[in-house]
Length: 237
Image 1 (cartoon, rainbow, N blue to C red):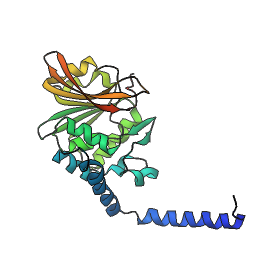
Image 2 (tube, one colour):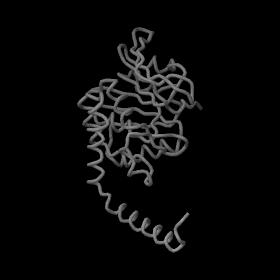
Image 3 (cartoon, rainbow, N blue to C red):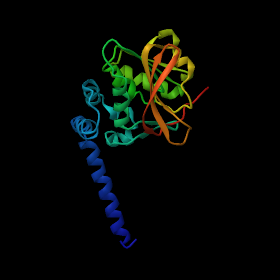
Image 4 (cartoon, helix red, strand yellow):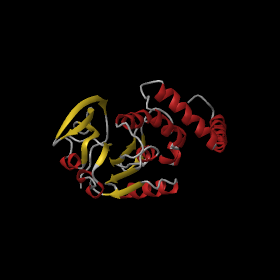
């Protein structure tokens, strides 16, 4: 407000110039370094101790799963918008949910809510097969194309209502749900193998929810509350 007009123009032009230089200087090596800092400072320094999860988080290029104008913010500890009123979860939450199912080679995992495809990619670094469902068709197509381009042959993406799950490939060792529901959808319980686990945020849309870890015992689910969370709502057709 107190700068002369000519000074304002100079400041703006300098900002544009240096902004352009910064974009050019932000290389893949810079992103890799930011990714390793994320693993060290946001995950390993907290309660993420599962080695395979830490390795996967340090490998998957998170910046490619967000809009281009947000890529330099991809390794910060917060969610980011990805369009269609959806978000990519903060790195810690992705790591926490991954660690919670104790992923290992040989596992078959179902994900409800593909979103950006980032959670599926992290899982695919560890388990044998990932089946992921996204109700927003443009997101499903975009994520499927990106996962294919990055070489994830063990991920299958489907457009559809996640409430029904994907029975053709059941039973699953684990299910991860990345949207908040009021209760665990019964079809998902049916598609879990005995002893299989589901991690899902439960609670009303728009409010504070609880991330729940549940194990299938017969036709019942033994539940354990993990932590308070806030996720986008579970969308139905």
